[in-house]
Amino acid sequence: MAKIAGLIRKRLCLCILMGLWMITVFGCGPLVEEETENAVLTDDFSSYGSFPSDPWAVVSGNSSSWSISSSSDVYAARFYTTDSLYSCLLNGDFNSSGKTSVSAKIKVVSVSTTGGAYGLYLRAASDLSSYYELSLDSAGGTIYIYRVNGALASVLNYASLSVSSNMTSYHTYKLKLYENDDGSVTLTAYIDGTAMISGTDSNPLTGGYYTGFFFAYVTDGYVMNYLITQP
Image (cartoon, rainbow, N blue to C red; front, side, top):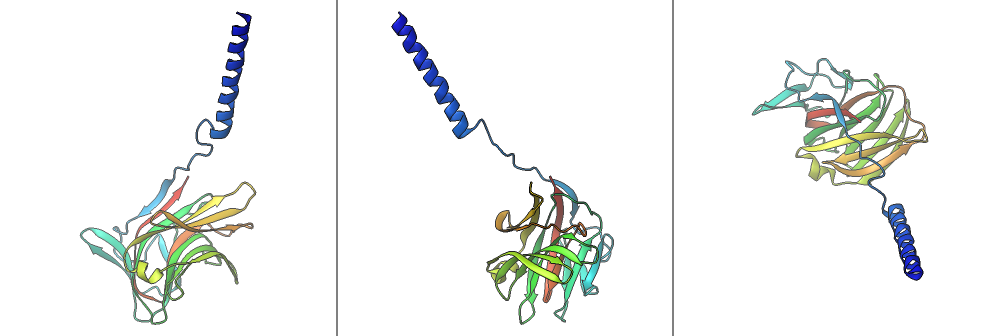
């Protein structure tokens, strides 16, 4: 009986050790919860008699070539010009620090003969003296994440992308900012929910927290379903 009891104790100890090993290796569940994003501002562009108007403002570039386009009760802000200029808009309704993201559905019908660019702003100062930018360049076929502070612009990351083939139909573009434990921030660019590139800034911008979008050398472009979220 003593031998049997000893064998049982050995097997019990072995089972306990095996269970502890499985918990260590596999864990008791997800170690990091996926952040749930909450919409703090949405704009479907359905409420404007003219555009741009409050809370939108053209901070730089062409302010006379915007209008609201609608079809079957679907609205979009439209930029149409024959001058191939640029226009940069900021939203004044939300200006808060934190792990913010901005997204919009964007379509570009035509650009200048040398190509065009479009994208989103995050953590922008009210005068665009500093900002993070998601930019898609049709001429170079490249997606960028920029950090701009005064006269200094730096590329946090970039990748080749067939911008010209994507831009003529609506896609959802998103720029999301993550605050890291070491005080840095990481920005990730998404297209239709797929992460494309990320870049980290060890000296985060604090000059402003506005969001916005831009067209550069775009002659006909649309923006709809503008969304700002926070965890």
